[in-house]
Amino acid sequence: MSITYEYSSIFTAAFLVAMTLMTTFAMLKPRLLLFPYLIMLLMFTGTQYGARDVDLTVYSRGIGVLSFPLVNIFLYVLFAAVFIRRRISRKNNHPPAMLDTTLLLMVTIIFVYYLYGLAADISLSNMVSQYGLINIINLYALYLMMRWWISDDRQLDLFIKVFIYVTSLMALYGVLRWGLFGGDPANYYLNFGGQATRLTYFDSGQGVLFSVLFVILYNRARLSLDRGFKRWFYYFMMGLCLANIMLSFRRSLWFGLGLVFLWIFATSNVGRKFVILGVALMALAFGSVIYKERFDTSYQSRWATGITSDITTKSGNIDLKEGRFSELYAAVGVANQHALLGLGPWGINSPRVTPLKEHDFVHSSIIQVYIKTGLVGVAIYVGMLISYVVWWLRVRRRKWKNHYYRLLGDAFFCGFLVELPDILFGTPLTIFRHSQIIAIIFSIPYVCLKLDSILQKGDTPTVESMRREASEPRISLPASIASPHRSRRLVKS
Image (cartoon, rainbow, N blue to C red; front, side, top):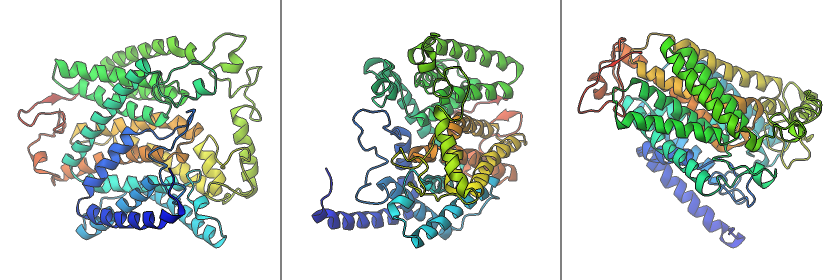
C-alpha cells in the first residue's frame, strides 16, 4: 500500500515529529536506540535478490515517498544525537587509527561531489542512490558511533552478548529453514538458474557474521575451563556456523572461510595447528559432498554450470571480454575517459557505465569506486583497506594486558577476511546492511585496543575491571565468559 498525495503531507509531518522526539530521546539515552538498531542489523538480511516475488526489505522502506530509506534517516538522526551527546560530555579522545583518516577523506570526496551535483542539477534521489557511494557515508557513521559508544568493558560485553545470542538464533533458524522449509526463498540458483539447490542464506553478509561467531566460540571453547554442557554447546554452534556458510553455496564465503582457517592456523601454537587442520579437512570433505549440488562436475557441462563457468571461456581460459569480467572490462573502458576524478558517486552516471542495468554498478567495489571517483577515490579506498590490515597486524603483536581483547579483535578481523572476496568481486557498497557489517568489523578491533590501552595506563574503564587480574600470563575475560560469582584463572595458550 502506498501513501497517496492527499495524505503525504500528514505522513511527512508525523515523520518529522517522530524524528524530533527520537533525536531528543537518543541524546538522553543513545544506547536504548543504538541497540535495537544493531539487533535489526543482525536479524534481517540485506537483500531479496534472487526471490521470485521481490518485496521491500526493512532497509528499503520509505523509498518512493522519500529520497532516503527510513533506516538511513534513522541512522543519521542517531549519529547526530550521539555526536551532540559526546560533544556535551567532552569525553577524552584516543589517538585515531590510519583507518579514520582514509575514511574521512573518502567521505569528504563524496560530499564535495554532492555539492557539485547540486550545482549541476542532479536529482537528490540519484545522488543518494544505494547504487552510488552513499553507503560509504553510512559505514563511516556507524563506525564512529560504535567507537564512541563502547567506552568501557561492560558495554563491549553487552554488545558481544547480543551479537552471540542473535547470530546463534540466526544460525539455528537458517539450518532449520534449510531442512524443513526449502531454505532461503531468495534463491537465484533455483528461481532463475534452474538448479535444484537449497540455500541457508543467499545474503553473503550473513556468512560474514557467522564466521565472526565461529571464531569467538572457538576462542571461548579453547579458553574456558568448563568441560560440560557449555563447551559442547560452543562446538555445536560452531558446527551450525560452518553448515550455514557451506550451504549458502556462495563462492566468496567459501574462499573467505579458507582465509579464516589459514589465519587461525598461522596464529596458533603447534598443538592447535593439528586441530585446525582436522577441522579444515572435515569442512573440505563436507564441501566436496555438497559441491555437485550447485556446480556440475561432468566434463560435458562444466563450462555451463561449473564453479568457474562465469569467468572462463569454453576452452577454460580467462577472457576479460567474456563472462563475468566483461562487465568490469566494459565499465573500466567507459570510466577511463574520466580516469582522474571519475563520473560521480551517484546511481546513474553520464555516460552510462552499465547501460543494460537500471543503475550503474559492477561486481567489484574497487572498480565501483574507480568508476565513481576515479584514481583519486580508488587510491584512498584501497589505502583504507590496506591500512586496516596493516594496523591490526601491527597492534596485535604488541604486549596486551588483557589477552581476551586481542582474541576478540582477531574474531572481527576474521570477519574482514571473509568479506574480502566480496569486496574484490562483489557488491558490498550497494547494499546498506553490508556497509553496516563492515563498519562493525572495522570498529570492534579498535575498541578492543582502546580498552586494553586504558588498562595498561592503570585507568580502568569500570569498577568490574579493577576486580579482574589481567596480567600477561593469565587471561581476564568479560562477564559473559567468567561468572561474576566465582573467579577463574585461565592459562594463556
